[in-house]
Image: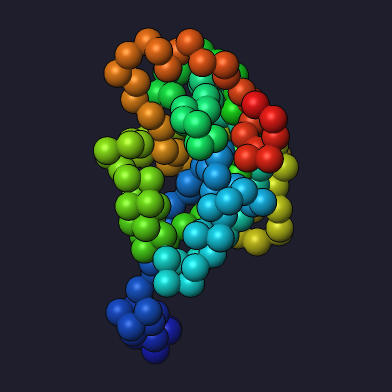
Length: 162
């Protein structure tokens, strides 16, 4: 028993567990969207796709610029329950996403509740369909009501007509 405890101690010191976080993406970082490849750059960390999900609360998902950029507005209770994807990410990828999303200049990273819609896999990180999970998401804090006049969407696809 003593040998097992020493071995466990050595493993934890030499190979400490890396913190992991859940992140919900709803726009250009989803699979098949223009910035998904940025999530797969090895130097940024390796995301693990966990499930498709939708927000528990309604939020306005709007297209904010002529470049078809989606913004999830930090106005709970308005809009739709927004669909996206949950990923398990390490600190390196979370730091990259903060920089990529220009947080806190353009987006703010907050935690929201999500309902798992369609899980993937059978591993220890598998989420159950219908379960509620908390994850980080990048939202836009609005400064004027012009944002609230825009059409809202349940889901984003860069190739869809808006």
